[in-house]
Length: 437
Ligand SMILES: Cc1ncc(COP(=O)(O)O)c(C=O)c1O
Image (tube, rainbow, N blue to C red; front, side):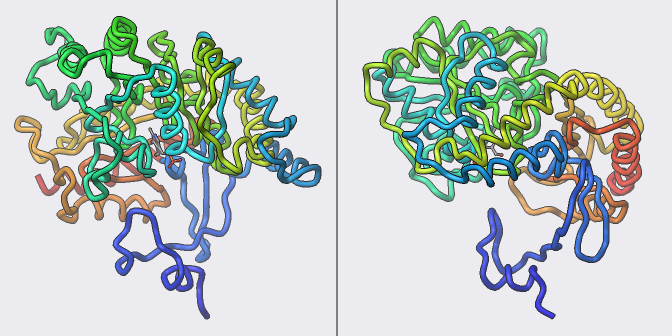
């Protein structure tokens, strides 16, 4: 019998994959923190797929809202008003910090960042954009040019005018310093780069409040407030890419809320609908919104504010509110952090653990003194990372590995028992890494 996997191998081009070598399990169902495959194997989703199913799979309230909206109106062009779009934009304005008031809807995170570049350039009349070397902002041309990570160079040259700076990655500080005696050089160097580049030419600085797919770098508490000051000093717009950190992932509504920083523009996707229907958004502050009252907004998408996606978004935000999931994420995040620190004590292969809310990473090393990574950055897996993921899979736990990192980001609705199942499995499988040291 031809399986979905066989057909996909023949007819589907896969994301980020050498096409001939991949084998994919067919997933046929999911509920809450769990999903299962066509062979009847069940997995705890300990990475929320791609860190997007924040409220878990198949939440009945969201499914119901999508169905109701499908019965009522599946599509209407963006130049008509429609209730789900209007209500979701209002909810976004309510939960984002400060005076972020007006939203342009997109279909995902990359498009949100591309449109944020256009908006920032139009509003400031400036051309350059600053981003960071270990960032990921999406795969469209603008967003991938902003991106620092190894997914960018194969598709260069991207868009012109992008300048990159270093990350607040304290475990491997680019300046060879240690926090707190470092004088926050990772932030001061941004100011220096802005000076060399001519602040009057810089439209925006794009930051993930907590760097996501490149290692979950939780910045020192002074970092983002200082970046806010530097941007304000030069009239550079601060754009917070909250695609991964938004909607409760870090124990707050948005990542920037951990440090009471208000960006000028925020981009988001993932947790806004869980991916039940694709949706992204660019949210701008009052001043920027006002500018476009009498200037053309050169942005547009056929599906901007798609009714099904926005209905899913409205229902999702209601779930966050009604089930107190943001508070739950913060509370579970404390238990998660405590156990990660215990794991670090128990496993010599762990160099560093980082987490905020239910957003975490374990960084594996060959040697704690030299900090040599267990698997090379942007290199082939010497086998051990595959063995660890295989072990976790065998125990029915899905964890997303990359280089020498394991990304742990379960649905923020996770309960104590599920958290324990996931962390126990990680604990047991890390013995494999310890053994090869
Ligand atoms: C911080 C960040 N920005 C942007 C994106 C791109 O989002 P999308 O894949 O929806 O285009 C991602 C995806 O992982 C992300 O983590």
